[in-house]
Length: 463
Image (cartoon, rainbow, N blue to C red; front, side, top):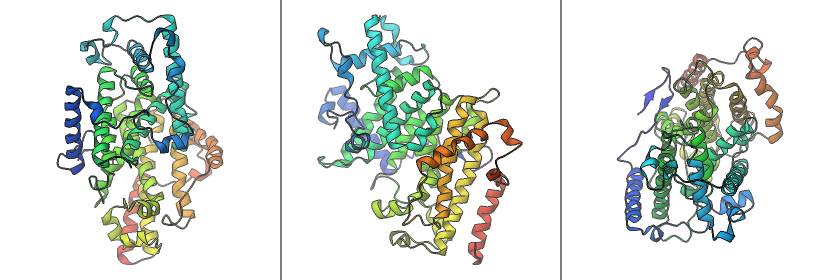
């Protein structure tokens, strides 16, 4: 699966699909059904879309504190009989008209698409479209702040256009996650309804990238992002959808036998975010996206390993999920029942030491990518890397107990870490590193540490 990058363990799984997996087959069948409904004009018969925007459910509304996307009516020209949907579509055409011919090639061959339609916009229409887009971006920032506090903190030190573009990307990811995970108490067949919605979402995403089409107001920021950053690829978006599928009980992957299997999951649900962000962050002179790709993937993998280690107890108790590779657990004498019983012993502690060393190896690989970014993009990445990496330290401080205790880095601790993160982005830090950075292990040393932990476990020696 994939291509080994930089001679190391980071693998690019872009566009990898398993045509034999239950989830892939189920999504393909649901997509075929939805495409047939499009042709027949009967999508309303099978879609669960209601008054709320797709991917906006009770959890999102509760976390944010109000209904999302209801502000469109404030910008409608009611006197002319304009509807909210008509305004959203007009704004989509306005944004699309700013794009070059290569950004949405299919739109030039689509009736009414692109600036090929020769549509002009009045000053009032432009003013209202700009205001609506700005409001949609603001709401995207609110959703990002509510669900991804560390991620949001990193965006705060980006230039405004990049900051808002990253919010747009995050909201797409959030909505995808909610489509898969949201409860569906009123559905006759929740899995079938979810797969239909996910198929609709995938087709919507493809049409946005291919033709610049939008459906609702929260699509506008992502469309604007694509116009401003034409190199933004659709592949990581498609791959993330497949990562979400891997979490579906009965259809997805119930257990991961090896690290390589878990690695694919980590790429799809987290490494993809790095690839989505790269065109926005941009590369420093002398570097290309291809060169910076490996550290970006590494950072996503590091974040996801950290999430998995932090949430071992919660995943086992609340979801009956075990993400830790089965072979790793076998090596260290840890059983699934032990996780469900929340029993922390020496074997479990040694397993956590091993997995933390692996995560830090990926953080170290990601760290090499910071200087590859444009100067204004380095601090947010370094800040996120440092803040998330502290979760591993918290796990250690908690005695490696991730079964009954959740490692947590507080808001003020993150804030106080900003000066150190800034210093690490400066060239002088390579000559005069911070005291806490003295003697940090290299990649080779982390790999050696992983091997030593395993060997000690096999030999029965204390770690």
